[in-house]
Length: 273
Image (cartoon, rainbow, N blue to C red; front, side):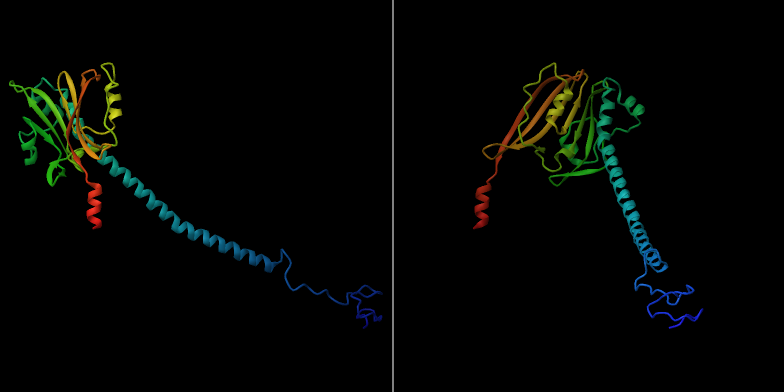
């Protein structure tokens, strides 16, 4: 093999002429491109584009999912707020009307912008409750297949047509069971005396009253509940708690309703037969 430049004979293994330095052979490149070559950069760009596309797809479906979930939470909160406001409307009206005890019914109606009726829209209330005028919920609740308003605010008047008592009744307490609220114990208020705040007593009871009566000298709370005794009997109780106008505990009375025995074992045996 001769050098194409100077003509000097060169060895076959020589890559450069020993006489003039002319390059005789070019070095062979490896099969795989080295890092940083154009081809490898293209591969990296494709991988980056694929990752970006995957991220964009995730974002495309994730954002609507988050928006839907957020809207559902907001809707639930709105429903809960509306229910809370609606459920507290009757009690608030009763509290407001109690401030008019001793005044004429017409004065309370005018100031509070409400219309009292002399009879309920529900025959069940007309038969069971005592009142001279009534303000009630338009929504109803079923109690033993009988329709009642969710709540009522009844007024008892004096002979001179003035408000004597205001009575708030919450029929939702009896919706699941006419015996009232199911508890795991008998309510014991023996530790409270005339120095106790009524708020502490109510917190101890820990469930809503069925009826509240507002008088010029006191507030009477009536609770209905039932619990299972050690012998298996179900004991229903009407608990009455009275507070003075200073919101201090006065006294309480528990009236037991005859218990009902549950024949659990006998029922199970008859079913198995």
